[in-house]
Length: 240
Image (cartoon, rainbow, N blue to C red; front, side, top):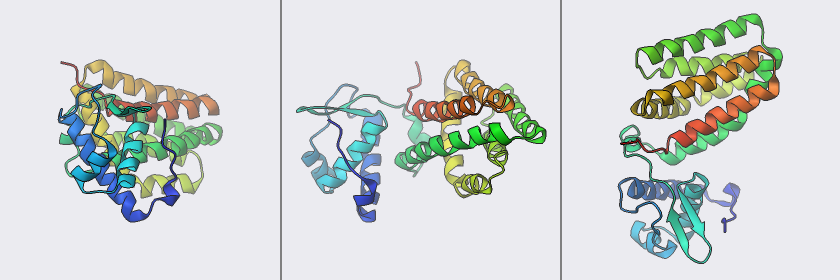
């Protein structure tokens, strides 16, 4: 049964410890200590192992469950649902996967709203800039490059097309976090089959088409699905 909790009730120091415990448990799963479908140690055992309180461990487990990494079985405990590829750790040296996930959560709502508003307000010059960024991503794919700059340009162009400075300010203030997540997901996509990179670009194409057609709901849905998929792809394993 899902654990009910409110971020507002978690002291900052405990929230930081939960983030650290999230990362530690994540690393044990990725490292293969706990296989898919295996049961994790109890909250008490994890608390002892990591030198943390049970509430801190409980919050970390709740976030891992939200992210689809583990699943809770009533009366039985927590079980590993997915084992991301070890490459995730290679592309996040010293970083926090939990922070990346929370950024994706936030972006899904905010950028979905921005795409819808851009569809309603965009001018021809905005479409030209969004399309230019999209075409720059095409070049990136052909040259097998990471393309974080072109990806950032695409999303920023959409924020600017809202003609609401708060969306642009949000993109700017979160730029380091957004870039970190983009660098991770785009690098991971390059390890997969070529179809994976093309699928990401197809998502961009859908967003561009919806904004160009002034279809606000399709733009919102396309952007939200794109960011949700990016978040999911981060935890995919690399096929042998």
